[in-house]
Structure formats: structure tokens, C-alpha cells
Length: 394
Image 1 (cartoon, rainbow, N blue to C red):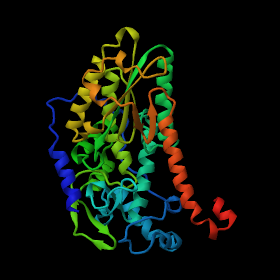
Image 2: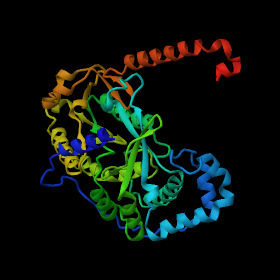
Image 3: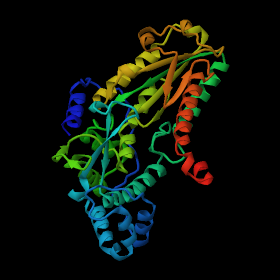
């Protein structure tokens, strides 16, 4: 628990905010001031579609809760509608039990930095969040507020669709005889360092949220607490002053709204981009006669760093990766003067988990997939003797 608290505190302490905001804010003309009350049938539909996962502190297991909902529907409905109409989130809904999860299999389990804090929230709080999420998402979709080039946490969008879009643009530019500089930006603990006051201001002035709805989100973010659970042992309770809970339903959507002004910076500089959650791919086709000039890209990066600092998001330079694609399909990075970006140049980059080389032969990705496949085949071989053919195929 202390590690997670100190990690967020030290990350925010390293950030020096600039004097001015390089983004361009365009207020939303629409307004979302009041939630619609929920009916029993809608409540049953929402509960029926939510995964039965909750908190170790839930009074009854989520599966049992779903089974007995017809008997307790009216009291649950009263709690939900009371929260929506008053703009107050019950305090018991705002406590998360954090169960640390290794970021990748095989990492050293004794190094605390290798763990990601996954929040386990009460099942009933997830029901309330899902109802709020659906109404907020409907408002955002109706008014075209969400970032078009953000694929994280969106239906019919994935890392796959994000990669296809970016590499399609790269192919088109290379086929036209241009070089393309692709930069992968990485943020440190982005979800955990979100500033609540800035988020509320963004919801109010850019998204168009007000009235009871804004009061609800303020209540949702205020006075959140968490404890850490490891192998059945609980830490003491600590307050969560920053961030949106990982593992919540509205948290990822709030994070996407927090990042909204970032797109205005990239558009201002004429830089193409595509984001997936906090991973951002920015790329710029460079015409043959301009191969020694990437001033626009460097100026854009400067504004991005300034905006991130202003919003308490820590830009992780150590994980920045740069790749150059040439018109011939092979790497011709020497033809492009990368300037200060030269130190971040990589012959192979990992973009949203996909290994890419500049000639698009995809040798590194194929090797990684084959290696992983044989690993799983070896593990399957050890259980083959006591499985039926049907189960083994499955």
C-alpha cells in the first residue's frame, strides 16, 4: 500500500507545470445536467450483462446477487435512483480492494514496481457505474464529443483496428515516395496521476456536464479509499487523492475525456496520431525535399510534453521509441535528420504489443508468435494424456 501511494506521489512530484496551456479548448454546446431514473426492467438487464466480479468485501457473492435480484430488485432500485437523483455516491461504493497483478508473466515477483494495482470494487457499485456509463456514453455519442482517433475502451475498436489504421497511412505515404517518422509515446502510471480538480473542470467546461450529473462525478471522485489484499491479508485503509480506479467501469471513459485536449495540439501542428488508452502513436510523412526538417514534429512534441505536465501526466522518455519508414520499404533513417530524436531510434519497435520492423517483413513478430505458440504446445503436451480428444482440442 505504501509503495502504491509513494509511487503516485513521487511521479507527480517530478512534474513541473509550464506557464501556459498549448491546447485549444472548444466548449461543448450541449449539456448533460440530469440522469434518467432507472426502471426495474433496465436494472435487471444491466445486472444480467455485467460480469459477476466484485470486491472481497461484498456481503454476498456477485453470482448469488444476480440470482436473487428478482427478490431484492426494489430496494436495489431505490439505492440506484437515490444516487442518480441526489448526485451522491454511497461511501461504501468508493472503497477499492487492490489486488496487485504482475504486469507480465515471468517478472520478478519481489520487485514491487512489477505490479499493477487492480481495483476490486463492490458489485453494486459496478451496477451503478454501468448505468451512469450508458447514459454518459449516449450523451457523448449523440454530440460527437469523444476523440475519433482514440481506440481504447470503445466498442468495435481495438489494438488491431488502431494498428491497421496507422500502418495503412504509413503504407500510403511510403507508396507516394515519402519517408514516415513514427513515434511511440509512453506515460508513467497515467491512470493513477489524474488530477481530480482538472478532470471535474474538463467535464464541466469541455464535455458539457453540469447540475446533478457533475455533482455525482464530484462525489464519485471525492473521498475514495483503498486497501491492498495479498493472499488473504489486508493492509490498512488509505485515501486515494488522485487517479481514476483501474478496474472500474466509468474510470477508463473518464480517462479518455481527461485526454481530450491532447488531440487539439496534434491537429494544430498537422501531425497524424492514434491513441489506445494512454499509448499514443504520432507519425509524420516527410516529403523527399524536406527530409532534413522535422521542426514541426519537434515543436509538437514540445507542446505535448508541456500539456502532459500541466495535467500531471508523466511523459516517460525512457520508453519513447522512434522508427523511420522509407519509400523503398527498407529502413533509410540516414536520409532523415532526426535531430534530438536520434537517440530514441530503434530498428524494431513494439507497438501495442505488436513487433514492427521498418521493412514490414514482420520477422520479429513472427518469431515472437512462434515462440509463444511452442511454449503453449509444450504445456498442452503435459496434460494430453488425461484429457479427452474433445477437451484437448478445445
